[in-house]
Length: 253
Ligand code: SF4
Image (cartoon, rainbow, N blue to C red):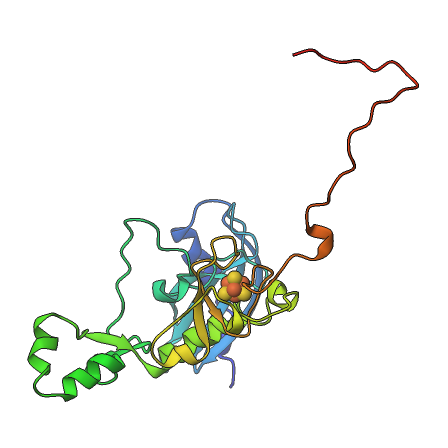
């Protein structure tokens, strides 16, 4: 694109425009010009305002066709490559992490949350069976067994992947060191529904996972079939003997 000579030469006009907008000492050296289009050039100046290190003033000038006068189109302050800028905006729903919701906090779920589907689309198995039975359907609705929304397949898969790959799956250090899996543990409480094929709930109060969902191939040292080895059993001690070679001190009750 051909640079318009009159626009390129209008450095003083650009600096004068900045002088009207800024305070004394805010505008530094002339840096460069950028041809933006036909008779449209941006002049760039360094910014010397405190706190704006590596920021740049940009003044765009233009000229009407067959006119000699150059006019200022716009002026802005722009960050340079090494300028300190705020991090890019992350939507509120993407910023939330597990554990961010404290007591009393309210976290609305979006209508289009892919983890949920309407209850009539993919409901609880037991409730669905009852709904299919026309004689039971009024009872189901009346006692409120049906839920407006339930976990979608995607939500269920997300949860399963999260649980399985976390501290309650087979890869956890405590599971790697365990001799037996949760599958054979008497403290495992079975779940209902599709997730029950892989997960249960640990109900051993002395286990790290007490009250948590664990995969069948997780495990820990508190497995119900773990027994003490011989060395851990109480050992019988020899009978007490008096030392007959020295004076023993006794405390009388
Ligand atoms: S006690 Fe240990 S092995 Fe048993 S269910 Fe809990 S985590 Fe699994």
